[in-house]
Image (cartoon, rainbow, N blue to C red; front, top):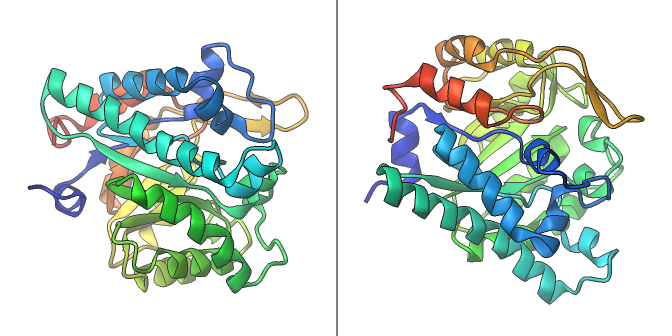
Length: 303
């Protein structure tokens, strides 16, 4: 049986695009603090539809809608720990159902990556792009471990530990991953060739290489133009890159401003820099993923 690690070694694998932009395109209001995670409770069929759209477009890996799903965040809305565990696991089951349907219809293997967002995502104040929350490594480990355990029980193929802004939180997640038996990629939010908190990416990638569970490292939710230079600094692990689709996010109007990037045109430079997992984040939809998958065919077709 082929494992995710095997598929990664044979790469590249095409990731999906942004969950939130597709849900907003369906007409959903994601202005609350739970963002797309709210729909795990309120409209799971909408999340399933997004997963199916990305698989139809050519994605081979679905990233679950659990980025902002946390015990603390759901508790603020009166959702119990038991129900939160069920919602976290639902995120995996929704992606798995879509993956199995895509396999049955088109052949090949599809993979499910359980999204593990940073502590700052739960705060819903943009701090995942700043880092340094004033918490210790031990405190951050205690935050991440229960969610990881709940997601692991739903048997994803891999954890997508994503948009991590600084080394302290990366260290905490590496500790929290220990003993769960699920591989992970560790992807940073970046500014040029540093983490969002300003630490050199060479140190960030070195830390990732020290985690027994980590099978790839790189950057996401970043300007596409910065991706190749960031990946050039990574040695010893396959690269993962899924940047934003261009423009600048206006937090006041809650809209993207500026032109979109051509993700597919930039993908060859990412592959040359060692990327084995390639996709898109905010402002990247099924149309862009289709272009990317078509560009990578036949190397990534139905692997």
